[in-house]
Image (cartoon, rainbow, N blue to C red):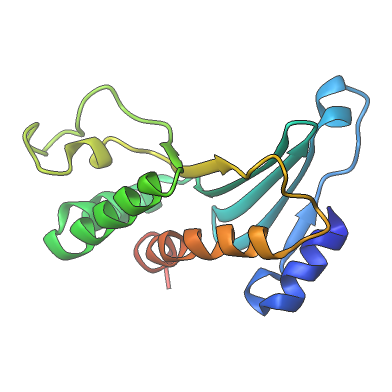
Length: 164
Protein backbone atom coordinates (compact mmCIF):
# COMPACT_ATOMS: atom_id res chain seq x y z
CA UNK A 1 0.00 0.00 0.00
CA UNK A 2 2.80 2.43 0.86
CA UNK A 3 4.54 1.69 -2.45
CA UNK A 4 1.29 2.28 -4.34
CA UNK A 5 0.72 5.62 -2.62
CA UNK A 6 4.33 6.68 -3.20
CA UNK A 7 3.91 5.84 -6.89
CA UNK A 8 0.64 7.80 -6.94
CA UNK A 9 2.37 10.80 -5.33
CA UNK A 10 5.18 10.52 -7.90
CA UNK A 11 2.56 10.59 -10.66
CA UNK A 12 0.90 13.73 -9.24
CA UNK A 13 2.01 15.71 -6.14
CA UNK A 14 -1.69 16.29 -5.32
CA UNK A 15 -1.65 12.82 -3.73
CA UNK A 16 1.42 13.16 -1.53
CA UNK A 17 -0.21 13.83 1.87
CA UNK A 18 -1.18 10.25 2.75
CA UNK A 19 -1.45 8.03 5.82
CA UNK A 20 -1.52 4.25 6.06
CA UNK A 21 -2.94 2.36 9.03
CA UNK A 22 -0.83 -0.29 10.69
CA UNK A 23 -2.05 -3.77 11.44
CA UNK A 24 -3.86 -4.30 14.73
CA UNK A 25 -4.98 -7.28 16.74
CA UNK A 26 -8.55 -7.48 15.36
CA UNK A 27 -9.33 -9.60 12.32
CA UNK A 28 -10.64 -6.66 10.24
CA UNK A 29 -7.30 -4.86 10.29
CA UNK A 30 -5.43 -8.04 9.38
CA UNK A 31 -7.69 -8.54 6.38
CA UNK A 32 -7.97 -4.91 5.23
CA UNK A 33 -5.13 -2.48 4.62
CA UNK A 34 -6.48 1.08 4.68
CA UNK A 35 -5.02 4.44 3.73
CA UNK A 36 -6.14 7.99 3.00
CA UNK A 37 -4.91 10.97 1.02
CA UNK A 38 -5.89 14.22 2.73
CA UNK A 39 -7.37 16.80 0.38
CA UNK A 40 -8.87 19.28 2.83
CA UNK A 41 -10.36 19.44 6.30
CA UNK A 42 -12.61 16.35 6.55
CA UNK A 43 -12.14 15.70 2.81
CA UNK A 44 -10.07 12.75 1.64
CA UNK A 45 -9.54 9.95 -0.83
CA UNK A 46 -9.70 6.59 0.91
CA UNK A 47 -8.25 3.23 -0.12
CA UNK A 48 -9.02 -0.21 1.27
CA UNK A 49 -7.17 -3.23 -0.03
CA UNK A 50 -8.28 -6.74 0.88
CA UNK A 51 -8.58 -10.16 -0.74
CA UNK A 52 -11.51 -8.94 -2.85
CA UNK A 53 -9.58 -6.08 -4.41
CA UNK A 54 -9.08 -2.36 -3.97
CA UNK A 55 -11.85 0.07 -2.99
CA UNK A 56 -11.32 3.75 -3.79
CA UNK A 57 -13.55 6.48 -2.41
CA UNK A 58 -13.81 10.24 -2.15
CA UNK A 59 -15.26 11.23 1.19
CA UNK A 60 -16.38 14.32 3.04
CA UNK A 61 -17.30 13.23 6.55
CA UNK A 62 -17.06 14.03 10.26
CA UNK A 63 -18.09 17.56 9.36
CA UNK A 64 -18.78 20.22 11.94
CA UNK A 65 -22.01 22.27 11.82
CA UNK A 66 -20.26 25.13 9.97
CA UNK A 67 -19.16 22.83 7.15
CA UNK A 68 -22.60 21.27 6.90
CA UNK A 69 -24.16 24.75 6.65
CA UNK A 70 -21.67 25.72 3.92
CA UNK A 71 -22.43 22.48 2.05
CA UNK A 72 -26.19 23.03 2.20
CA UNK A 73 -25.85 26.64 1.10
CA UNK A 74 -23.77 25.57 -1.93
CA UNK A 75 -26.18 22.75 -2.82
CA UNK A 76 -29.18 25.07 -2.56
CA UNK A 77 -27.65 27.54 -5.05
CA UNK A 78 -28.55 26.83 -8.65
CA UNK A 79 -25.06 27.00 -10.15
CA UNK A 80 -22.95 25.20 -7.54
CA UNK A 81 -25.72 22.76 -6.56
CA UNK A 82 -26.45 21.92 -10.18
CA UNK A 83 -22.74 21.34 -10.77
CA UNK A 84 -22.54 18.94 -7.82
CA UNK A 85 -25.57 17.07 -9.11
CA UNK A 86 -23.92 16.71 -12.54
CA UNK A 87 -20.68 15.48 -10.93
CA UNK A 88 -22.51 12.84 -8.92
CA UNK A 89 -24.55 11.69 -11.95
CA UNK A 90 -21.33 11.35 -13.92
CA UNK A 91 -19.67 9.34 -11.14
CA UNK A 92 -22.72 7.09 -10.84
CA UNK A 93 -22.57 6.43 -14.59
CA UNK A 94 -18.90 5.45 -14.15
CA UNK A 95 -19.81 2.82 -11.55
CA UNK A 96 -19.44 4.78 -8.31
CA UNK A 97 -21.91 4.41 -5.50
CA UNK A 98 -22.96 7.67 -3.80
CA UNK A 99 -23.36 7.25 -0.05
CA UNK A 100 -23.36 9.29 3.10
CA UNK A 101 -25.04 10.04 6.37
CA UNK A 102 -28.42 11.55 5.52
CA UNK A 103 -31.33 13.02 7.40
CA UNK A 104 -34.75 11.44 7.04
CA UNK A 105 -36.25 14.73 5.87
CA UNK A 106 -34.90 17.86 4.25
CA UNK A 107 -33.49 20.33 6.78
CA UNK A 108 -35.74 22.91 8.35
CA UNK A 109 -36.36 25.94 6.16
CA UNK A 110 -35.95 24.08 2.85
CA UNK A 111 -38.91 23.16 0.68
CA UNK A 112 -39.44 19.38 0.49
CA UNK A 113 -39.86 19.70 -3.30
CA UNK A 114 -36.47 21.42 -3.77
CA UNK A 115 -34.82 20.03 -6.95
CA UNK A 116 -31.82 18.83 -4.91
CA UNK A 117 -33.65 17.86 -1.73
CA UNK A 118 -31.92 14.47 -1.70
CA UNK A 119 -28.48 16.15 -1.66
CA UNK A 120 -29.56 18.69 0.96
CA UNK A 121 -30.28 15.84 3.38
CA UNK A 122 -26.61 14.78 3.41
CA UNK A 123 -24.39 15.35 6.45
CA UNK A 124 -21.56 13.51 4.72
CA UNK A 125 -20.94 12.56 1.11
CA UNK A 126 -19.02 9.57 -0.24
CA UNK A 127 -18.49 8.33 -3.80
CA UNK A 128 -16.93 4.86 -3.82
CA UNK A 129 -16.31 1.86 -6.02
CA UNK A 130 -14.35 -1.33 -6.12
CA UNK A 131 -11.72 -1.44 -8.82
CA UNK A 132 -11.73 -4.43 -11.15
CA UNK A 133 -10.47 -7.64 -9.57
CA UNK A 134 -7.51 -7.83 -11.95
CA UNK A 135 -6.14 -4.46 -10.75
CA UNK A 136 -3.07 -5.10 -8.68
CA UNK A 137 -1.20 -2.83 -6.32
CA UNK A 138 1.77 -2.99 -8.67
CA UNK A 139 0.11 -0.93 -11.43
CA UNK A 140 -0.61 2.65 -10.39
CA UNK A 141 -2.38 3.68 -13.64
CA UNK A 142 -5.89 2.30 -12.89
CA UNK A 143 -5.71 3.71 -9.36
CA UNK A 144 -4.61 7.09 -10.68
CA UNK A 145 -7.44 7.08 -13.26
CA UNK A 146 -9.95 6.33 -10.53
CA UNK A 147 -8.58 9.12 -8.33
CA UNK A 148 -8.71 11.53 -11.24
CA UNK A 149 -12.38 10.63 -11.82
CA UNK A 150 -13.02 11.63 -8.20
CA UNK A 151 -10.97 14.81 -8.35
CA UNK A 152 -13.75 17.14 -9.63
CA UNK A 153 -15.91 16.08 -6.67
CA UNK A 154 -13.03 16.64 -4.27
CA UNK A 155 -12.37 20.06 -5.80
CA UNK A 156 -16.05 20.99 -5.47
CA UNK A 157 -16.07 19.94 -1.83
CA UNK A 158 -12.84 21.77 -1.07
CA UNK A 159 -14.12 24.95 -2.73
CA UNK A 160 -17.62 24.91 -1.26
CA UNK A 161 -17.31 23.20 2.12
CA UNK A 162 -13.96 24.14 3.62
CA UNK A 163 -13.28 27.56 5.08
CA UNK A 164 -10.64 29.72 3.43
